Image (cartoon, rainbow, N blue to C red):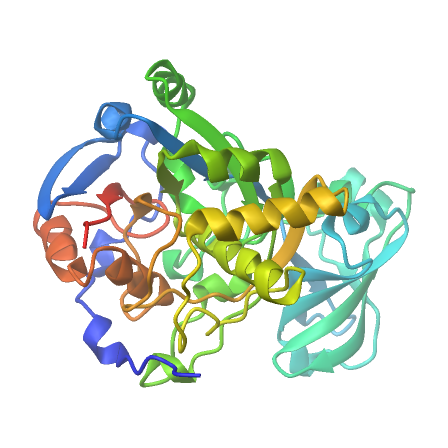
Length: 405
């Protein structure tokens, strides 16, 4: 397998702290919108997005929902321990673990973990909120695995764990905002169309959409579909290696409905992905289809699967094989995981246009953008920096239409 040798120092740019949007704008769709089409760059406002979308498009949204996954506990000694829930362990399915009514286990990142020995922790409840006290949420350290830990939670009252998190947890806003989560984040660090709980980070391109923008897209005759990829904490991890070959991507689970796959396979439309998470899901479908052709069944998409060999199958052949597999096995949903990394040199199979925010320097997301615009990312970002665009999760947006080769 040939792994691309890409130097991360070539994907840096100067991002002043004042250009990072610490809070969202009062109106979601009042953000600026950069337009990149046929190599030209211009700007508009997000509420005008429908006018700029290509005719005969199919827009794909990620309808994952951010969970209040950050919990604060305290040892009897008074030491504070922060627990950040990453992914379910027992039960291993999101829908099952959120339905648990007594105890469950999660893979977590634990702050101050060295101070947590074997004692059972109680939730920190400084205001003595009655609803929190009634649950009596406890945490036990079951196992340490490298930089993560397996934590068992137990509680009283027979309520589902989803309600426990809603009552006791806080929204895990990105660390680069350099502030604590506030009331505004409960609403604004969530898309309007969020549906399925599981993400610890928002698919932030979707934060700009309002009901009026969605209605205008529908009125233009553009089809809208959804996939669900639960965004993991790895989305915040910086690339520490000098080259991308030394970086390990995290697995993220995704779900795609068969009806959507059939429409995608037969549509012939311009596919517009809302956010990089939608891109990674859609592009992963191609390789899941290739696995159906070559191995008889789909499998998780590994980090370097797209590289090191030539894929001669058309998108229609790959997606068709995936639909055929689901038909034969009576499946209405495809549930897989992906570690796919999209870097310069990647050949796109599904996505033609992308709505996305402006990403951190030296990040895997910036590599994806570079791959999407055939290396023209620096001109786009220079324009955004010169013209007052706001960056990162609560920042402004862009519509990038992939150049034809």
